[in-house]
Image (tube, rainbow, N blue to C red):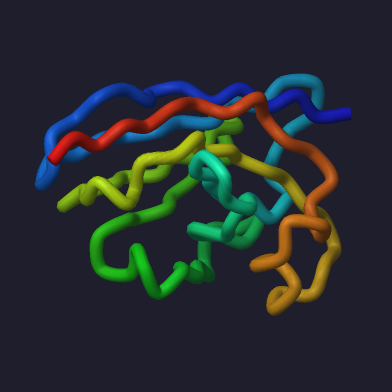
Length: 126
């Protein structure tokens, strides 16, 4: 069992930056691919970014490509999401999730993930 806890959310002005963190307990994250998803009010939860177990591969949604950076520290069992040039449309609850032994291309789908955090709110004001 893996417990995930997100932190770092908050209120920021458009153009600003935030750094989200996801900390794991219960089991090391070193064998899990880790993703970030977000859910805005009235919308479905959508893929944001994913990093493979070693940190050697990443993938981003087109809407965040060039602005967000996903990284991980397996020694600390943490995954981070650096968010830059934030826009009001980035406002959402952000969730981290863990998956193991899934096809890489399937990691953009939320049903691929086995464990989820409780989410952290990010609000970007215009």
